[in-house]
Amino acid sequence: AAALKRVVGVLGALNIFSELALAIINAALSPVTRPSPPVRRVLARRS
Image 1: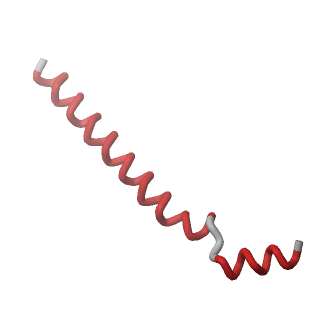
Image 2: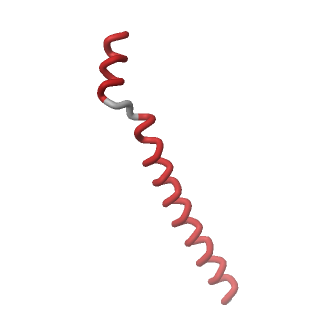
């Protein structure tokens, strides 16, 4: 039973870590996916 509890604890920590990693990745990608206003203006002018 103690080993099972340990496994559950490790899985929970991994889950939290993966969510943090996803949040960091999203924060790093948001400037790329969301163009800055000047870029948007240029794109709007072209279309």
